[in-house]
Amino acid sequence: MLRFLWPILLMFGPQLGPRIVKFVRALYRLHRDSRVNLLIKLLIPLAIIYAIFPVDLVRDRMPYGLGRYDDIIILGLAVWLFWNLCPRAVVREHMGEPPPPRPEDRDPDSVVDGEARPTDDDERGS
Image (cartoon, rainbow, N blue to C red; front, side):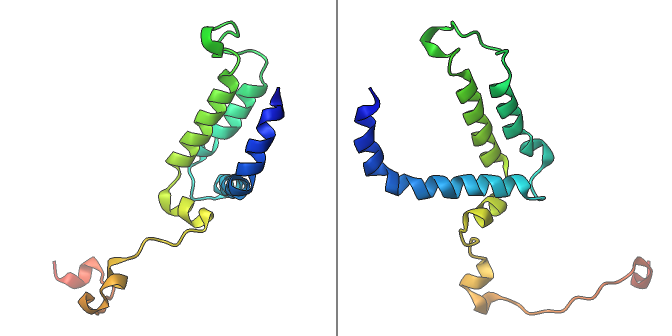
């Protein structure tokens, strides 16, 4: 039955394989990054625990096979939520993408140089 999948796997495997590996590495790095909120980090482990736990919230005899595939659906939703709730700059960094260009990098002539020094509230003469 799965014999028809081999040509598809051989055709798309070299293109999708490196992308999947890069995505899984980025998920792992995001999970270990301290800039990502702890509650967001708990999504994937909780989904894995739900998939391993023998009692399901959705019965296995639901129509259209929803009961059988609820573990996969929950895990997929957890990964999707984790990916979309992580800060964009952190995700770009872990995916190896360059940061977005800053306005001063596009037009350096419009940048005004200046100096700043910290002052106390007492020095202002209030």
